[in-house]
Image 1: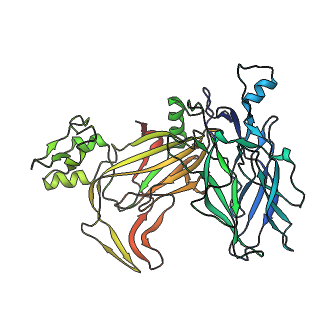
Image 2 (image 1 turned 120 degrees about the vertical axis):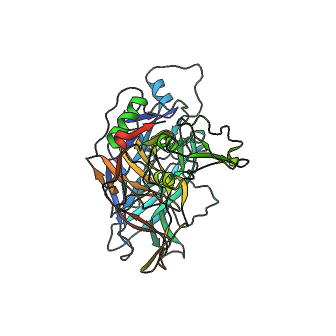
Image 3 (image 1 turned 180 degrees about the horizontal axis):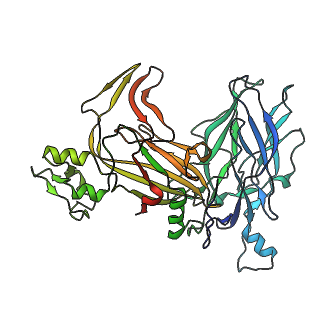
Length: 459
């Protein structure tokens, strides 16, 4: 995947300051142990040690991923900025008594596997000093306890709680009735203003209580400046470089438009105390504002049948993507959310086994907003993932699993009549896949499309 080469500020420089800690993203690994004990239920996983760690930086934990996926993960390595400045001869009026990073006291063996089919594998938890948290685990292929120098723990006030997600391994235990399981980890709080930073390490255990805090933690970005975020010029470059092409279904009759086209061509503003709708200024200047009386108003189509049908059909020539740019995972990623507007959401189609029944009105409504999101690494400027707002949920898809057009630009498929977004063409069932009953979401490529790289505008 190509990256955008950016200059200025801290975007795409390969490293990031989180306050007292500076981190670098490591994507080169040394294979330590591969586990294939699931008897055909899975292709197993491999545990990796980060390789090529620069001088003065330290490992925080090892990496793990399934064997049936291309190796495309990362872990963060860190160095203590205060300690580094002191070593360079800089002095401060007050020096923290506790450094940001410290070696573990020792290690506890949490799992081992010995099989004729596999090399031996041993997973160790680093026991942190008082006031510190471990960020991940260490894996070896022998029973010798790792050296304390192998890893660093982080001072507790520079960390945030993390949670397990996306299980990558489940293995029966010979010693107990519990399964040994391995998950990816992520910050518990991941909103736009949250400071938790994913380290990229894994969590493992034979027991997981959703109410208990994990033994490992994630990092915390204490630098409120978020200096690694792209500036406006870089945002425009990212949109131009990675902006997806949105394909609508060949049988789509409710196409998108710009909001201004919708207002100019007859959309009406209604108030609960008035029977007649009011034309909307194309700039939206007469729409209600303030957030206190919004429920008293609604937007509807004109009464004239021809005018209604004209507005329902949209105007793809005027359509644009409305872009919302925000920090993610403590400012280590940039989320570029792209919103598309359709004047009308068409009726649903119900699928019952082999039979599909088109509804007359169920599911239809005026004004349909849908979105998808590009997640870009602030370390490298690389497209990392894309989020698709599928009906009844949504999902993140790794960049390696996306379809592309014109090199680096992903493809987004908009479903027929409902306009939800999907990464690949096909029929997506909103309901019970087990009984093959639910609402059909059909997605396919057609001549109806919008190129967000030229029609996406940050608002």
